[in-house]
Length: 457
Image (cartoon, rainbow, N blue to C red; front, side):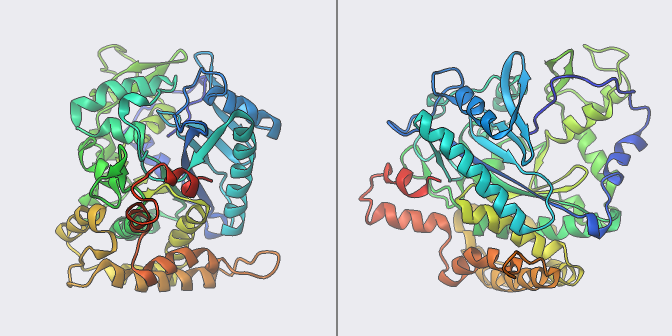
């Protein structure tokens, strides 16, 4: 989640809706400036007993953050607590229960992205080894109850933890028990954003299926392959979902701004503190009519904060965020941006991907999204084929897109090899969660503690 700066700039208030829409337009970049941002989360655990460490305890999350300063990371503080780090590889932040996230720097190619992930994992593992901490690459805590998990000292999380049970049954699970991999990509114009948004939203269930990696809950199989994806179906309907309006002819920056104005607020950040505004209207804020801030209007930073509090399958800020994948091992961290860059950063590939999904109805999109958490690649398409069959076509398009980009590493490799883990999944028909279930029922003999040995970084 977003790391809020600890000091507030002297920003002018927003005076019109045009400023809201302008934030999206300001994200437009020519193709030669398109970059790749990759975010990945992992669970932190005590090697001795697999317990999730608290922030304050000796050798806990605070000490893990402090330990990274030897690599040039600079602390970000909130209320006297170090809650994030900034450095040349982007930012490191904490999810609500201490899930550790790297929000990578905007990079030119996938070779750089994978090298960045490698540097980060090497650093946290070195510090973790000194503290007796390990890092687990799954989409869901496999064996932890909510009441066994700590809460990090971040003001926005306290507000969200209070609000989530009011609007859904699984919002606390989303906050405390899940991890994801995410890719952030650029667009050249409003029309380019629209096309990329539509293709990525339509194919987000395929990404969920390929990366499905959360089949266990509280020590046993949970009946899903991506339980993390299932959690989003009852987290908060006002700020999640497939956004059917994206496929309307009228969709663009203004329509997304209208959607966000209808998403209820969580907070306002003033004087170094988060103020609870859960359920209030940003439209009222825009008019200077918030009950606890009468006459005060938002700034663009407030609008950016608000944009980060919606959680649809694809999210627009000044770039597009692909949000459908479970957390996973190093190869999957490199494979997710390869999948989306191959599809969206080459015009021919983008057109080919749109041809595959352009005739789907909103009901088709929703049904596929609903089936995928339990069925993954066995979910059915509108034409009766399985999602696995579509996956073969989509990966061929992504491969062609990466080939056309012709970004080579020092020994002449293209970016296409980063798709290999996904090609293997489609060839076998088994997503990561199914392989874990096979091991649980087979060689692990029902002993889920074995997952720590096999799925840790």
